[in-house]
Image (cartoon, rainbow, N blue to C red):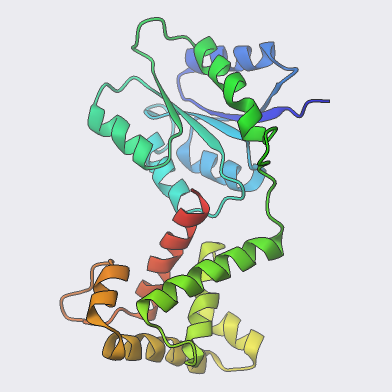
Length: 260
């Protein structure tokens, strides 16, 4: 039995939305309408919770909440396992807007104003790429287990820290790795407390060790490596990033790597 492709439709125009739904239902043997939304905020929560295989996204959600570009941007920094295939639908003829959508992670684009456009074209495209999305080929997209995903994240973060010149012998090294992974999972505060409870240290000790590890790196590491591998802007009055700034920078790098 062929596995169905689960699809989320994010479209605020009622006619376009209904036409897409009708085309999906016409192919109910292969496609499953997992959800419908006209809100970028609701769509983000839905994608996190229900993990659709594919998303059909209208860039201009004028009747809904937020917009498609904003949703794409937030998805770039959201941990998804695996990442959905995203088709963008747009009435926007701006090359800047459409190129931005691609850079933010859109896999394919349909211009509603192009000659011959129809919702059927969009669904036919999904049917064509469905085998690759579902992993019928040699390299199936099987979601990683929780432990496999954490090991992959840990390997990436440690590799990034090593390139920067962070000293692995420093206690703060391991705490910072854990903090980045927690942030990637959506836990964006209280890292010191959480890690401290895990390792039997108080919160202040953990947060101090994290900042100390950053400070000593900026003091001792090769300046060329710092400039090459830590590209986030620093405040003019500070030469060294705070632990929060450091963790969020690597959170974004980690999620971007996982979402490739």
